[in-house]
Length: 362
Ligand SMILES: NC(=O)c1ccc[n+]([C@@H]2O[C@H](COP(=O)([O-])OP(=O)(O)OC[C@H]3O[C@@H](n4cnc5c(N)ncnc54)[C@H](O)[C@@H]3O)[C@@H](O)[C@H]2O)c1
Image (tube, rainbow, N blue to C red; front, side, top):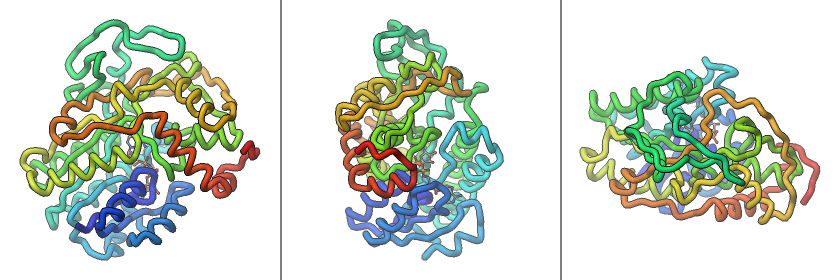
């Protein structure tokens, strides 16, 4: 199979590329290297046999740089992936997250190539903060048993949750626009598509920062002696996220690819809420404590009491539908994910120190 991964040098794209290459597939990576650090992934992927094309998904002309226009599978991973940076430059967010997807869709339409789209939980707005919460020692929890369409406090948020509202963030708005086009190309033109609304993914080779990729950033910052902010919600790090590690993402994508190719009618056009789920939900404070256990260093925490626009206090994905349709379940716990990220940071410590600057606590 020849797989095209747009944004394939990025955190998730590069891990998927590694997976497909190891499994014997041909992989073309299309990336404009806009994210600092991902150039190091490009070098590693080339060594493994990937075809790496420096191209901008927003430019129609750039698609002619690809070795073919006919791929067996397209994974749409390129994005401006940060909610805070989206607020700083909405038009940049729109061209990267919506317009670029239209170009990818048009290429897919010519040859009916299946597409798996990486969307986000930011397609859901302030409704995610509507359940009642209570404060515990290390985290916020949903109070008692609460339910409404798309939500059950025992499982989290699922695909039935309404996507209207006014606090998606610019990033969420540009992603949901793209997601609507993805689904329309499935129904109007028969392009096989799957959309995954991911919550929080983490991986080795993730050049995280305070805007995006927080868990990798927390590990890097801890080891470089840099400050980590607890932002908003009382600034105690009690907000919770369900953490999904890249190896589990790859297992899901493989299964979704097979389904799109072998039984498109049963899955095409679908949206799935994807994350680590309830067993892998942790607060920031709990994650920081696990990082300190692994590295042996204290994290320099700073407090920023201003809650970010469109931020969720607790988010957890209910992955029941994906589990049913693909017989998939996340296996890597946040604590194991931290160990994997730590091993990568140790291995690439000198590169990371130059990229981020740091006081060399190692
Ligand atoms: N990491 C998460 O927690 C998370 C959560 C939800 C959704 N997502 C989505 O998953 C996808 C992958 O995210 P990631 O964490 O790997 O982000 P990332 O920033 O590490 O990777 C994105 C890659 O896209 C490239 N890129 C950006 N604009 C481009 C353009 N115009 N043309 C070509 N390449 C371009 C960047 O250089 C980068 O290598 C994104 O679509 C993101 O919105 C990520």
